[in-house]
Image: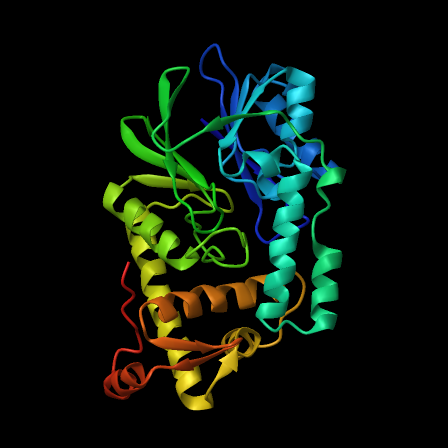
Length: 329
């Protein structure tokens, strides 16, 4: 297996694609984005390992985000490769107009419900990817637990919804060690965005926390993420991100306790400050994921588009010395 590092002009942190070519098949996990520079880098990286795009037999996609799927259609058209994506993400990867219209409609609804100011909404609309500019593949769907044999390796699909509805990891054994290709389910530097990155996901924080627990319990030796460098302690990293979300939940409650009822945009501002670019979506999305979860646990009460802290949670917060709020999941 080879890690191919690709630049990313559209998002944060270089992307990774992973190449299997140690047998009769040539297989990629993820493709990078659709930019010309990325295509050039991918072609050069493949050439270093003695293969070309035309040699690729199969492509496995971790999730629908265009920085992971952008070249899948072109690869398929040049090589005839089979492209796999989870059933929940397949319509977006295929460029299905109804699926994309549904996504955009839901985004627009949340823009208003979260209280994002109109000038910031306008920035987001300019920033959003136009799927018609990306060559889309035909997709073969996959689901949790599916196993694919790639040369001498078995890749097992692990569905880890949260960051994206159909986000999947692929676990296998390399050199006798249990490893996992995590896409954006587990990253070495950033905590993957939850709530804004895929507004189709219901109960996004709960789903993501369960995905993290699944990673932690698996005790993989190494994780190969969708961005940046490999993770040598996936269990520790997953537990760290769970802790991070419990700290953030405490901060959300503390903001409401100190400020009184706020809408999602104002909670986001208290957490993250002034937001620009795609973070205009990710900031309130993250705040919403926490507010929605805390509302379902009874710690927050929604009143129209604003949220206030429940009296019981406020009383518990006064006694708290950990600055962490345990999240039931």
